Image 1: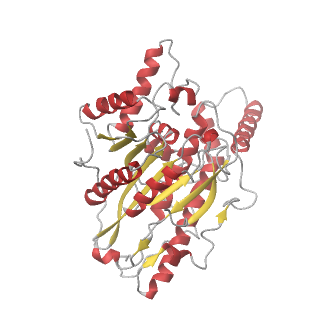
Image 2: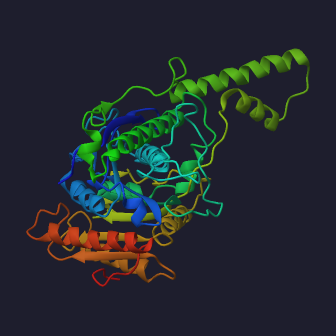
Image 3: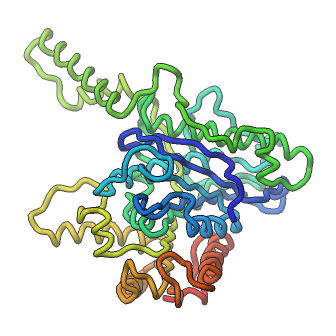
Length: 434
């Protein structure tokens, strides 16, 4: 099963600062000479979300652990977290799932910045010296944008990141309805000191720096490393909570909003004293931003894939979200329900059709009719220019308890992961149905 996590920690949700339990796992073996064997070292990460919390779902779920194990075998760094109200995470499960979308988005932001900060042992700069990034002087350093075309020298770290957004059951429902990754990252560019976004980025920087430092120090022994080698004698496996920000700067989401309101009221008072002319909305926004915001930074956009295990479809998905439109995007309300449905369908198509996606389910699933799952999968797979693939496993139920089905689940995921590792993007594999 899974090895010990490299890090256990908490991050605040960008929705309302609720602390969320998180774990990061690294592949079991890491070779210090791996960079010499491969021209470009590429960061690969996978996030896996758990089933419905009120029914016992958490990041210790057996199916989540099975999938995570296969991702680790493929060389992926794996991140898991507990939604609000699940496991030891604070708060309560919502009726709309919109706070859970923010929970997942919070971890996506953390995970991408964490992957950005990782360096292979032995990577070298142009002057030949080993690079171990340090964020001690300025913890919120800019990260190279994916919009520029990188020129990677031999033995360099690739500027490309592979990211798998995955989930099982309820977790897959949240994953497939996430906003785009660039929309998520936009929340972490222009950030204010002490906010949840700043806290998440600081934690990602600090943890990746800790990992790099330990790997570099212990790789000097000149042998293959394991996760246990890196974490032995360190506090990595100890749960990390609290705040990364300097004392006195940390503010909860509501407190941050109140501070902006205070600035606005101060501007109003100044406006009354200076005369009748009202500053424009642009002037007011610029003033507030100058007071509150830190320097903007760019984040590297990853190549996004989706992995859906036993995905939920209506009507059970609608019961889990109280029939609300499951999207974090804000739209103008329309009197026509079919227009709202079309917008959500378009959002799903953007996620699942235009990004390499694998859905795996059993033909004995009782939460969603196998017939409905099959039709849904076929329609997505047959769409023009579709990147969607699916695999139906005979005899498998929703909880994957039946004899032999776990082995086929592992094999299916293993083939898909191997294609990603070998080619840099998902390819059709003979074992995957279309």
